[in-house]
Length: 172
Length: 271
Image (tube, rainbow over all chains, first blue to last red):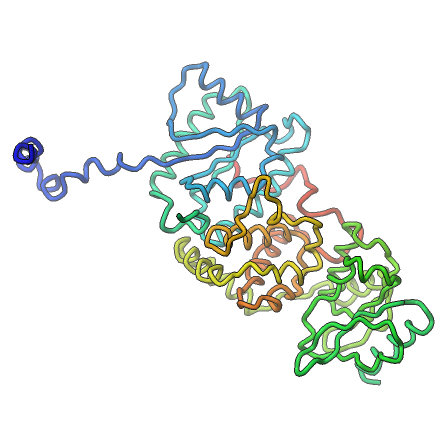
């Protein structure tokens, strides 16, 4: 087997095509090697229903996201975000009802205040702001949810794995 | 009369006539200025005032063994007076008759004040207390770095943390009976003095002081490891001022900054 392996993977035909491929035959596969892990904290009434709509509408979106449903964005403690980064998330999304639409009338207003300060504090202590996203997605915005997840996934993928530089990361 | 003489005279007077049963001030121990709790007017000569009096004495007001002595009096500089205003706004002063021996900037003595007097003094004389310019410059410097460099900077700082919680003990705003770091079902913040727990603790400590920190500097002065905690506090205080035009510690009836909201709050970061 050891002898046949080099012959089957020999990049001879590719090498003839372009010099770039000859230099690094694995480079072409590299962008697909890293798939970011996203954690989305969403509220039960709007964004989760929006995600549900995206699903029932058979919309395709990146499968990188792990959705965590909470009663309201007001229930999303900043510690949740830290815990996600600590456990190895490459990016975090927080999403809830549009202002004025909160099921509990004001949970999202309270959450907005918290995030405005907390995101800057995380940035200041070394968590790249491109890894932390916020949005309002209503129950009728299935398409917005799908686009949002795709966009956030692309952005976090561009940042690369959040490992060596992650100050919140739990190390074994 | 010098400042220290005035402090001693007023402390003795309030203890004698019963307006206070305990005066919280500073005395010298060796070459350090440490807090002293005076119940006896004859001992008022132990009181001192110098630049080393950094501990925020408002932190004592919530301790049951101190409250037992009420009514209380304490020596306070403007940042400490602001702490009193926040404590009052958060309904944490069970006995609002606390007396303040008010020491101003440049060792000016404003005499004995009640909380209303303190509020008036702060508004009149110390409404535009400016943060330390070197601190602001350092924050700017850090903000200009890349996220990775900042992470490296803070990792080095937080690595020193031994989780002694001296910062928490020194802070008059950290009065929770059970701090988030002590809650363990579930355990949100690891208590081991390791990277991830240290990061979470120091970040959350600063965040829980958002809109409450009065920049007295007691936490940083108390830190045995020399972690620049005021960088975090000042950064958050600056953001609170930018985002919500709020400066805590002036209005004893102010709503909490985090915990209230305005329908028109900025949301340029939300999609």
